[in-house]
Length: 197
Image (cartoon, rainbow, N blue to C red):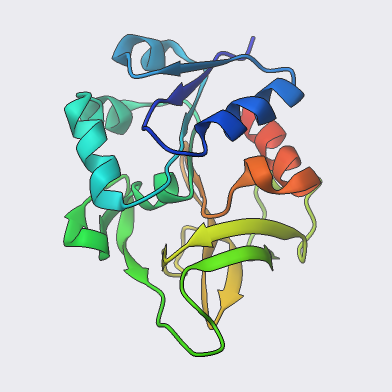
């Protein structure tokens, strides 16, 4: 039986994520309790806002070492994905270090304002169970000013001026730069696929 824990990181997207899970018929335990996180079958790290603020909340809740030690499937969403990397240019903050690399700010252009906000396409780089039933070219919903570079971890990319990693995966650690809980059928399918890992 799936026991999903959502880390209560204070993100503004938590309520919409809980509603998305209700639509999938999966109860979600919103918690900062290390024992409840460790006993869950699946864990989601949401995040909205600044990386430094999110990391400060995780440190304040004493969750950094717990998150780093998780062996079950873990999904970081938006800033939650960015926190999985070693560091972020946003506030020059050290992050969880579960994935190698540094998250960088978009280079602003007159025709491409920052933040990158709205619907954009996924382009698949490699196969992943997360993508079962999702099509390359599907649109998903983004709100972010920082992004992870393309690397060996990249499962899917999106182009906004430069190409960035929109889905990453390494071992049990997964990340979605977009908001699957706000991304219609493609996002719902990705969340369902995650819960089946």
